[in-house]
Image (tube, rainbow, N blue to C red; front, side):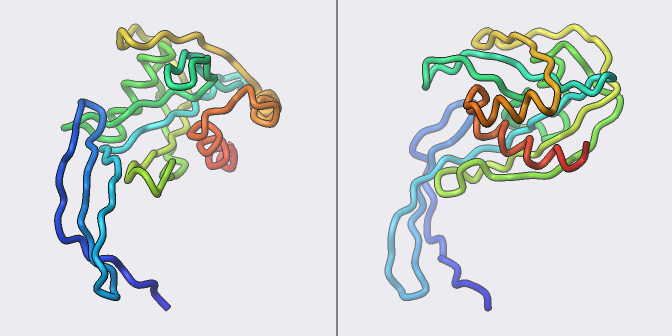
Length: 177
C-alpha cells in the first residue's frame, strides 16, 4: 500500500547564496489540513572515494567552521548552478587532492538529512589516478591522508572520522571495492 502524499501549494525562496536556497513550502495533507515546511534546496553534491594503485584511499583533512575542528573526509563538493554531478566530481577530485582519474564508477546516492534538505549526494569511486594541477577555493585548505580500509573503519569507530557524508559514502563504496 502506498503512503499518502502531501500536496505542495506554494513555494517561496526566503534566502539564497551560491551553494543553496532556503525554501518555504505551503502544503496540504490528505486530510485537508494545511501547513508550512522549511528546507534547504541544493543542486546536489558529488563525493569521491579515490583509490590509489596500492589500494589505499585518499581522504582530506580540513577545518570545519561550524564545529570548530578538523574533519577527515572524502573529497566532496556541491553541484553549482549549470553544472552536474559528473563534472563536479572531476573538479572536486582535482581541487582537493591534485589528482584526476581515468576510471570512474558510480557507487550510489544518498540524502544526508532528508528532513532538512532535498540534497542528493552521488558517490563515485575514482581509480587510475594521475597527478594534475588545480586551484582550490580560498575558504578551503586540505591535508591529504592515505588510509587503508581497516584504518578508515578504525577511525569511524573511534570518532576521528565524524563527517556523516563520509561515513555514508564509505558504507556505499566499500561494497564495490
